[in-house]
Image (cartoon, rainbow, N blue to C red; front, side, top):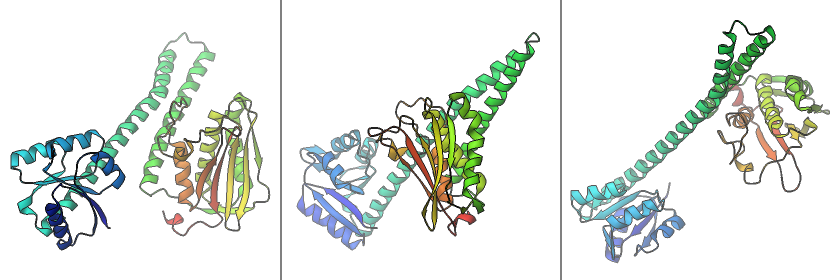
Amino acid sequence: MTLRLLIVDDDEIDRQAIRRALERGGLDATVVECDSTVGLGERVRAERPDCILLDHVVPPETALEVVPRLRAEGITAPILCIGDHDDEVGAELVSAGATDVLAKADLAPGRLARRIRYAIRLVDAELERNRSSRALEKLLAIVSHDLRGPLSAISVAIDALGDLDVPPADRQRYVDAVRRSITRADRLIRDLLDTSLIEAGKLRIEPSPGAVGPLLEQCARDHELLASPHKIRITVEAGDVGRATFDRERVLQALGNLVGNALRHARGTAEIRLRARTVDDDSVELLVEDDGPGIDAEAVPHIFDRFWRGAGSRRSGSGLGLAIVKGIAEAHGGSVAVQSDRAARPGATFSLRLPRQPAATAAAR
C-alpha cells in the first residue's frame, strides 16, 4: 500500500534529506511538503496523510507548540517529530501528543522507514482500542437500560404476588407481566448473541427449498396479536413468486424484526403489507410496507447500523433488530434496503432480497 506522508519543515535541505532517506529505505510513499505551520490543521485535513513528519522548529513555532494545537483541532494522524532534541524534550513531545520522536542524527533510511511504520501501527491500534472501548460502553449502556425495564417489572410483580390478599384476576395479570418481561429480556440477550455471531461472520444458516407465500402468511399470523390492539391489519400478497431456497426460521426472524419495526412506527395507520416479487430469474424480494411517518433522509444510510436509534428517537428496542436483518440477508448471499421519502409521501418500504439459490459460501457459515 502506498503511504501518503506530509513533511513539515521550513528548511528545504532538511526536506530533501528526508526524501532521500525515504527513497533509500524502500518505503512506498507519496510525499507532500509544507514549509510553514500556518493553517497546518486545514492542510492536514485536506491532504489526509498517513503520517506527519514534523521538524522540531518551524519558525516562529516549535513542535511543542504545534503538536498540542493539532491534537486540540482533532487531528489524529501519527506525528513523527524529527529534530535535535534531548530525551527530556522528546518525552515532553510524546506527552503533548506526538506519536514518536527521531533525532536527525538517526535519520538512516531503514530506521526512518521503520519508525514511520511503527507510528502508523501505534495510532491505528490506539484508534481501534478507542473504538472498541466506545462500542463496549455503548453496549453496556444499552443493555443496562433495556434490561432495567423488564427486571423492574418482574420485581414489582413478584412483590405483588407475595401478598396473599391479591385477587385471582390481579394475580394472573402479574403472572402475565412476568412472562412478558422475561420474553423481552430473552429477546435482548438473543439479539446480542446473534449480533456477535454476525460481527464474527459465524451466523449459521441452513437453507432449504420452500414456497415464499406460506412464509409471508406465517409471519402475518405470528404478529396478528401484536397488531390487533392497534387496529392494524397485516395483509399478504405473494403473487406467483413461487419458491426460493432459504433458512425458514432465520428469514422469519428477519421478517419479524421488520414487522415489529413497522408496528412501532406505524401506529395509527390501517395496515402493514407483506409482499413478494420476482426481481429476476435468480432473486426474489420480500417487502414490508407501512404508511407510518417515514424516515428522515439523513437517517436512511444508518438505519441498518447496529445500536443505531436515531437522534431523539424514543422507540423501544436495543437498536439491533435491523442490523440483524442485514446480517441474515447477507448470510444468505442477499441484501436488505429501505425506501422512504418523508418529504414526498409517508411510509417506508423495507425489501429483503434473497437469491433463489444461496451463495456457495452461505450454507457453510
